[in-house]
Amino acid sequence: MRYSPQRKLIKEVVFSTNTHPSADWVYDKVKKTFPSISLGTIYRNLKQLSEIGTIRTIYDGSLARFDWNTASHNHFKCIECGKMTDIEIDSTNNFIKRNLDNNGFDVHDIEITFIGICKEHKNNKRINKE
Amino acid sequence: MRYSPQRKLIKEVVFSTNTHPSADWVYDKVKKTFPSISLGTIYRNLKQLSEIGTIRTIYDGSLARFDWNTASHNHFKCIECGKMTDIEIDSTNNFIKRNLDNNGFDVHDIEITFIGICKEHKNNKRINKE
DNA sequence: CTATGTGCAAAGTGTTTGCAAATTT
DNA sequence: AAATTTGCAAACACTTTGCACATAG
Image: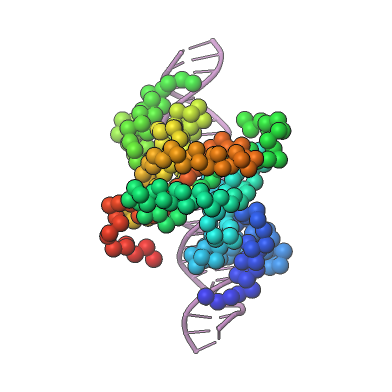
């Protein structure tokens, strides 16, 4: 795999944030340096970087997001602000894995998203979503 | 909410299977009875049924699937056959919930998908996906 | 030099929506 | 009769792809 300046920057952008950015977010950032870059290039590179394990693709509903943190960890999505926060609960994954291994499943990966209200929004009144 | 024959059947179709069908699968089934039904109607109804809690929407990557089982349970996706199986591990959710509650999160819902190889495919040679 | 990556535009997939006609209550 | 639902088709959002040109190694 060649390291074009574009690919290098795309990777750096994903590594620069904890916001689990979408392709579009990355596009906007990278455009500041390469104004003529195309979304296609962004998608191609994010896909490749995911495939070789440099980054990780996670799904927020049907939207793909990208995460530089490929180590096993889970996500919490706040229904007030929409933000995806990392959750470090190592013991959880191990607990689940053990549970499933005992039941004959061969678990390669676990995708967990917790949906609820994060600390900051816990005591705010609910924003009406209807 | 009115109960049109179409809506009634759409609901019945989702309730008739454990395959966690996509909108398209439901469409094919329902078309046998209502040949002129449109995909739009399928989507509208699946969305409404989800919203009132009759069924549940789950995500398989970016594809929406629908599940009549709204009780708390998790899913296992086999990377060989693509099938989504239900997983009953009540204790897991409770374990996680407790863990997060202790950390200040207010968890409303947990979306978990396990990805790996199910019993039936455990000893088969790997189908090449490249 | 050659394989790989880029920008562009078109196409693809899954889903939503506006509307007039039909149907449920 | 009034409000909701349908079928249709167009629009949408996100993602992928074919191609000719450019570039990294």
